[in-house]
Amino acid sequence: MTRRDLFALAAAALLACGDPPTPLPLAPRPHLEAARLVGRAWLDEGGEPRDLKALSARLLDGFVGTDPTAFTAHVQAHHQADLASGRTARVGGWLLSQTEAWLYGWLALA
Image (cartoon, rainbow, N blue to C red; front, side, top):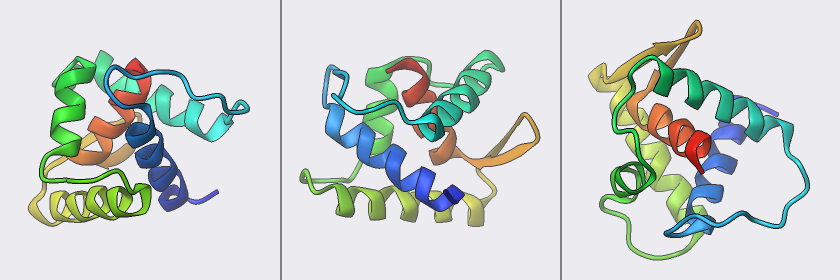
């Protein structure tokens, strides 16, 4: 699984969970667990915001609808804009966009 695949899957998981987040009846997915671990490390290092509602609001800002493919494109566009603008965080040797950190932080808390 590539990092892009992980990012897309994490974005789809966020959209599917709604508010409040509810567990999905999916088989264990070790790649999502890796994203959760990175998200937990980001939160432990002081990443903000630190709650599901605020993270959801930031990730969903400007998105209308429920289509997972459209949401993934929305998140990826914000991810690219973050990288171009230098809105990044270093976590455990990884360089994450702000959007990516929010997404993984959301998964850690969900």
